[in-house]
Image (cartoon, rainbow, N blue to C red; front, side, top):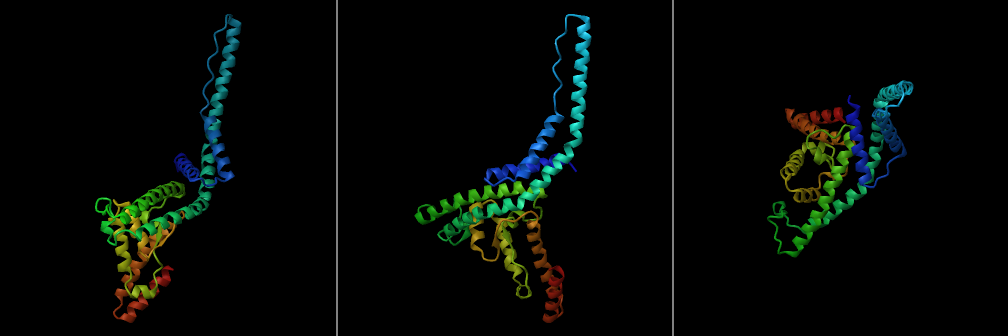
Length: 278
């Protein structure tokens, strides 16, 4: 494992937390200072060569003293290198432990910005295709004002989400397909009633719509706040993978339902799958 890279991720996480004015625990600050001290010691420069004395006797003494100083500097650097991995790992560990609290600290601002987009979305065209700067009727003051407010909130949301991504990278990142969606939204748990009603078709269309709007961030967020199936909240480290895993549960439960020779058989198969993966 390259502890240096992981420590760089920890630096990125702490910088993001500071940028969001989130409190940095004392343990993180102390670990960062210790790591900096180890790093600085491992890079100590050699002492500058002293001037050549005027006598042979003094010259020998000066050379010997300088040799000892060089030896000490070299040994000190090598000794510091022995502590590098441990200092990096300590910094990574305490930073990773701070991330859930930092994500929780972002939730209030996230909810407030989502609220701004939600209010603006109510005044924008019903068709998501027209929630676009190139197609919007800018002569309509209701539309233009709402779009401008939504655009400002979306810009702040995108930065907040970027900062969240910087934080969670030290914990292994998000991974998974559609991680940008599941970093901010969660599908409902599949229930047997929803599976039998084939609700996955509607949910899947929502995910596809999200993908299609990748190049239109304002429309993407307007669509997201208008839909009612997914719950909006910032995911903690590892939670994105859990949310992404719900896609497979919905799909596989549907496959199990269709595998039954009868309606009752399909329901039994779906119930068994959901119970086994709960």
